[in-house]
Amino acid sequence: LFHQAFEHFILHQLECPWTDWFQNREWIVPIKQAEAQYHHPIQAGQECQVDLSVTSLSTSSFTLNSSIQQIEC
Image 1 (cartoon, rainbow, N blue to C red):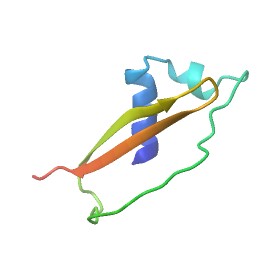
Image 2 (image 1 turned 180 degrees about the vertical axis):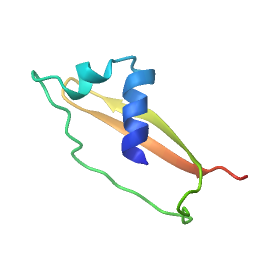
Image 3 (image 1 turned 30 degrees about the horizontal axis):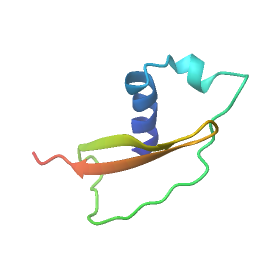
């Protein structure tokens, strides 16, 4: 879920073409650390909304905060 949200964030929030970000041979952007706190289970097939926001930005790194909410049907 997070990786799909991350790609959507890069494409639509940063307005960066997919090939410029993910296939750029000049630089890479590895995910260095990931943490999660699970408050409720997500069932397979359950629709969710993932919100991402930049919480820290420097010349060599950035930090994202994410929130995943189940969509009630």
